[in-house]
Length: 485
Image (cartoon, rainbow, N blue to C red; front, top):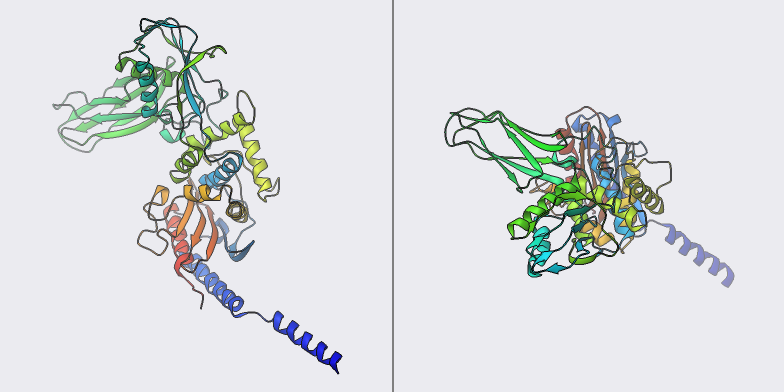
């Protein structure tokens, strides 16, 4: 009898154990409601389903439970979602406080304020070596009592190779977003061109280059007219081995100033000319020329400036989808791995290796461009979600990775999206946009502590503005649609 009672009791315990808990039942109900809400958004959008790729899942401990998928195994061009694997791989490879140095060196002594020889400006791959940092170096030299350099200003760009761009969508253009890369770079290798009307009708428009330097040549044929719409055109051309800014068209008397951002073609020489001008403004005259070269091994450091720590550089890249920073960091990855000079190809190879270690199967995705300014990259929505989940599980870099993502309604490329909705501050995601491509992927949080990972991708001819609005509405559903009972 005791034996039979034991068997009956054990069977009852097993039966109760196998019954779904209230929490499990509620979760399934919530998933069904959320799936229906997302399906309704897709249907009402009118978007062609074949052009959409969607993966949405809930993080449950060590699992990622799918809620809604559409074409989740189909490959799509991700555009700037490519910066998700770039950011994850680089943060996984480096400590978050690593920095990149820009140095000023010399081999000759300073006598009576004069450096008796050449001065060397050596780039260490800082993606954000800007005016403030250049002034820091100049002021260091001024405090050393240097008032003149008797030799040349040698720019050393040899940490990286001389291939200035990656495999991008089109041939290089003169826009700032398509700036070339170099281990010695300055102000994102772009120049600001300000145009104002002249003081009288018929006069030349006023053109101001910032920063002022001898690297840029200006050809200005723009005129001031009495009234009417502005027709100013600004372009950067390469003429006789010089970067020339050409300004043409007309601007009305009294019209507001306009600004155009153009890239340059020779990062190292551009940086050198700006350094020479900054020195001049602080009373240090370079008597020689700006030339490319190699810093001698015996050179001593006169001044050095460190970049922001990597965690802040990654935030600059992700929040503002900065292509230049993505490619600079990729070459730095190769350089830190020992390649000299570092190539983008080696950096991309190292990123691919990291993606495999994060759960992707080799040869099932294509990653050739770290910025995403290309149609060569191909990922499935499921693979993007896998990377986001893998990052979430790795506390060694996840906090920095999450912090770097744009916040809905707050900053970066999401500053003006999903404002005044339940997604504001509750969605952190990377955007993507190219001709025929729109994407949004990241994390959505809910007040009950639920964390959702999502990847929305679209490739096709329909209105990208409409696609983005649809994705925003779907993200809002993730934060406010169906709720646990």
